Amino acid sequence: MDYVVVGRLGESHGHKWNEQGRNVISHIFVYFDETSVISLSFGFIENGKLVISKPYGLSETYSCSVRIVRLNHETEFVTGVSGEWSYDFITSLTFHTNEKVHEAFRSNSVSEEEVNRREFYSGIHDRCEFGGFFGTSNVSRLLSIGFYTKPVLRGVNTMRREIIVSYDDSGVRSIQFGYINNGALSMSKTFGPSPVGYSSRIVKLKHESEFVTGLSAEMYNGYITSLTFHTNLRKHEVVHLTFDSKFQKPQKIELRSGILKRCEFGGFFGSFDSLRLISIGFHVRPVHTDVKIKVEIT
Image 1 (tube, rainbow, N blue to C red):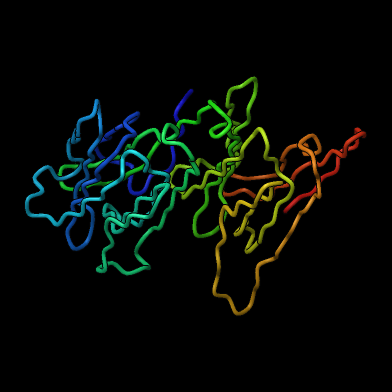
Image 2 (cartoon, rainbow, N blue to C red):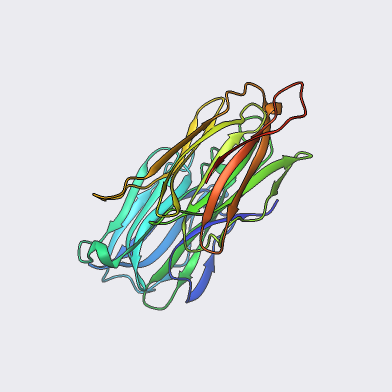
């Protein structure tokens, strides 16, 4: 099964590096100065031994500050990355795992107005779903970092359906769905612009027992600024942006179907353009009838 690219924090130019498939990580070495991350390297456990990767960024790091993120490699694995960057400088970097949040670096020398913020949450529940890191660098610094996920279909605990939502400070930009067909995960097209360069969150549903029952959202200035999926087991808040506005409040919308069986959920629909996801809704098909009902956020 193909790997799924989850985000890219930073600029895309520079020399590409790739650690695809190396998912047992015990150390992350983050080298930095007062303004940004300078270099990055990883410690992998392979055949029972610690193997250190090459540095990505400045190779001679003896004069840099360093933060070593230690992971309990037997039980802990990466599930997300968040941070900030300004031009070619990664000014904040945090690694999220199934056990805790590791803030590796945060610069205090860059104003909030100058930075781009991104967060990438995969929602993975098993180490084998983490597919390794990738990114770009040049001879003087780390330029970007992202990671892969590899959906697996082995056992109840890892069998999922996926909803991938990309967003930024304006609202939801695009959405993509993963369906289980004949025991394999099939990804839909992306509805909206390419997710590259935006924050993203992957909602994973237990496809054998969990199904969508409703949606709730907020609309502001033509964008979906809050989006939550409700299922028969729980609710998944994907994004919730807040705005300091004295004149306009977001429009709140709730769609609750009350369905009790998976067969009553009839699938998603919506609209989009080259900039954003404009609307999303879903069909409800009451049991014992061929009539479909539409409920929509627009």
